[in-house]
Image (tube, rainbow, N blue to C red):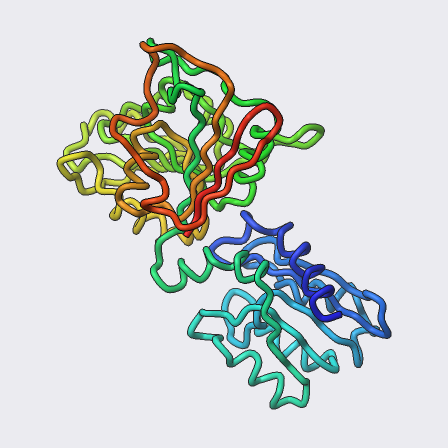
Length: 354
C-alpha cells in the first residue's frame, strides 16, 4: 500500500523534473480513508513545495490524513518557509517519505521535527525514487551536474556525411526519447561545431504542445557563435565557454540579453571540461543533457565524466568517406557496468550506466 502511494507521488514529482533547479523535483500525495484527497508537485524554485500544494488541494481533509512524499520534508527557511511547520499545523496523522534529503540543512532533521511534534514520520525506500534523485544527490555532494550524453550513429559508425553536413539518422521513436530527456534535464550542453553545422533548436517539442525552452551551454573556445543561430530564438539562455584570450571585439559583438560569455581555462586538448562542469554546477544544474558530436562524446567517456550514455544506432550506412563517430577504438564495457540494448522502431538504443 505504501509503495503504491509513493509511486503516485513519484508521478507527481516527474511533472516538475527539469524545471525546479537548483531545487529538486518533489511530488506529494495525501490519503485519507483509502482515498487520495490531495496531490501536488514542486513547480519552480521559489514557489511552494510539493507538500504545500498537496495540503492546499486537500483542505480540511488533511486533518488526520497521511502524506506520502518522494523526498524528506524540509525544515529550514530558504526561499519558502519550512514544510514541516505547515504539515504540523495541518494536523497530519503520519508522513512517509522515500528519499532522505542529502542537503545538510535537512538530512534527517525534517523527519525528527515531525516525530517530535507527534506526527509519525518514516522513510520507505524505493529503487525508482532512489534513481530519480541520483542527480540531486550527486550535485549536493560534488556541486557538479550529473552528465548524460547522447550520440546517434549510422550502422557503419558515422555521424554525418563526408562534407560534415548533418543527416537525419533515427526515427520518431528515438526522437521522442531525445525530447523526453531534454525535458527532464535542467540544461543542455553542446559544441560550437554542432551549432555551426546543424543550427539546432535544442528545445523540447512534442505534438500538440508548445515548445519548452531550455538553458543551453556551448563549448565555443574562439567565440564563433553567430547571432543568426536558431538558439537565440529557441533557448531560454545561452552560455558560451571561451578561452581567456578571447577577442574583445567578439565579446562586444556577442552582447545580447540571452547570451553570457564565460572565460574558461584551456588544456592541450581544448577547454578544460572539469572547469566547465564546475561552472555549470554553480548555476544549480543537477541534470545536464549533452548533444554534440563524437569527439565530445568520446572524451566524456574516456575521461569518466559521463554518468550515463544514450547511443542510438540507425539501420543506415553513410559510406567510407563519411564523418566517423570515433577516432579510436572504444569498448563501452570498460567504462560502464550496466549496458542495455533495445529496439526502438527500426533503430537500436543503447543505455549505459554505472
